[in-house]
Image (cartoon, rainbow, N blue to C red; front, side, top):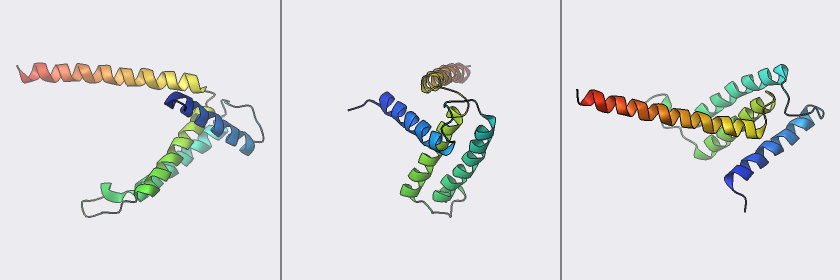
Length: 123
């Protein structure tokens, strides 16, 4: 059984394999502004498809929600983000480290904000 980190790396490597077939075996990851720009545009489209699968955000009267379709569209978003990483020349390890650092920053900021609200509450 693989742990989550190994599974994420496997997903990243499979997406590189897929992109190599599309791009005629260019060496990946690679900083390529053409393919990066293409995938930024694709990400916008995929986000729209997520919103179509779950329209409850649109108004209180809208009850359109297809859980399975939303999951598939979110998978497409994830794959497209992987493509952005790949075509930025970023390795799996670099990205994972940066994600963990960013989460730690966010947690630290949140703890500071919580402390500020506690202080304000008692003033």
